[in-house]
Image (tube, rainbow over all chains, first blue to last red):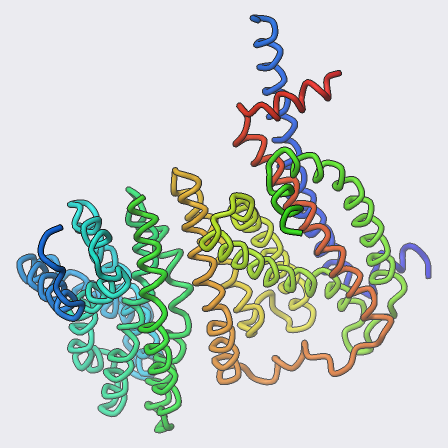
Length: 56
Length: 229
Length: 247
């Protein structure tokens, strides 16, 4: 089976690939949002910690 | 401590009477959902055309969707005023189980909002060109179905009564739970139109009613306690 | 065992253990995902009736399973919240909802994309799709309720009640929709029913289901860690943890 045949999906490419694409997008989004917020929160807490140490 | 609390049955009846009396004093407000019910049903022929055959096919569903919406609009009244003036807090502190007292309030609410829908059904039957047998079945489904709407809706109200703008949220919480009632009730009326037996659907509605009567007071009471904080 | 659970439920331990666990879970998920994709997209032969369009099944079916499973987890956590008032269970109930809603959404979208070549339209009122749509509304109700109540601990308990009410209703809704569907729908319903599925098609499906389960676990853990850190921002263990990492 050639690559183009694989991508063609027996004529069902317009349905199969969007399904997998949307799934990838949704699953990635669900991990990316908490990961990004976690980074932000940790950065904020670290800054606060440093300020407190400096003022001590 | 003060005098011993009245027996549970008497407390139940007293609360029921009080709620009915309160509604009677504000009767102008209480009829609004009823007008809404008739108004929605009137809008459908204007929207889809007055073809008698079309109305005959759509009538059962239209009446029942309108009933769901009317029931939902009136739901907020079950606990709102009692929540705001502190009566609910007193009820929660009483010696009697809150779930039973809640049931009295829901029944009172059904008597003033669900029962009138039932009495309005013959009129709507005429408007939507339903046959006599269909109107009878429509009334039977309303009699069995609208109490379920009040009982299940009470859970949603209890969860949202503490919120300032809970109206739209309430519909999101409650309407999906109304799906089985809608399906069985409107289908019974449809089946009656084609001369098919409807006892199965009515038994299902009856079963849903018993289930709701037995099960819903607990989550309603628990949700009220959360809303009271 | 109880002792271990208690220690796990304490925020610093949970944060530490979950942090150590996550890379392993991520690796296992990636491995299963690749295996499932290769098996589903490449190794499994095309269906004799549906051709290659059946490969959407490897997303659609596990998503639909997960959408129900996560609701069950939510209701289970809700029961624990109402009976034992364990904080970690509150977080599990609340933070499962968006993940469950995502899977429900995926099941609907992929069902529609699968339905187009099979049924010729994007949407039919098929019993399963209709139930899934109502399930999405139930999830949105849970999320809406949680966001609307300001006191987040009260919100979590409200969510617990709603999830339990929902879980009692889901079978009733599902069977009423199935019953309604058999009356209103012609023979199209049977299109999705595959009498027997070939092993080479089934194995990738099971692998994908396992991968989605792991994914749920990972996404949930990440949300729990975030929620703990935000809620306990002023606690000593957070300061210690950050200082440790700095060093």
